[in-house]
Length: 220
Image (tube, helix red, strand yellow):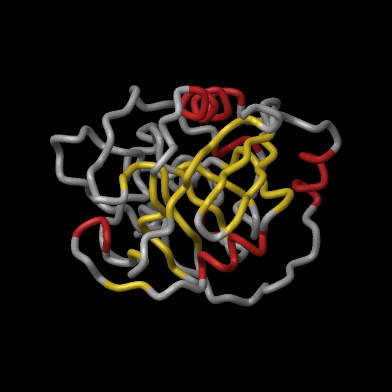
């Protein structure tokens, strides 16, 4: 979290991986960045990710479909973890509970009625893999503990350099893929009206934005 600890408002918001359902979520909040890149130029690391096509996942949301290409070469642990949740149907019916228009959109842990789902154990932080938190990339949310990510993720809507790995003192947030189709849906989500609904929902959409299904591309 870059609260420096995290991602994503100034509150300990749940950028965090999901914590156990019985524990009140501690929102994690990386430092917000000004929206200086509505249309950023392709980055070298994003081009590198495109050299060999990785597994793709479709998020069917109430604001449109988002197709994400995963980088299993540079983030094998993170990609394996994410696909495990996808294959289990974990993300079906989950909301984007934290939306900050000049920062990111975060989801993956709560149902539409704001219940937090139980998760698998946390994973190792792979933020030092060379991938950057640029617009259109997907990264893992976590608590102040670098190795605490579980199910929650966020999509950067601007270039968020403050979230990148910069050594042990600034462990960063692990990027593990990028949006290859559906940035219009991402931008539709970033622009929804939000309100402080308490706790992890300090920047929650007034009208819930739901991931109806998450599935590997080419599967039902």
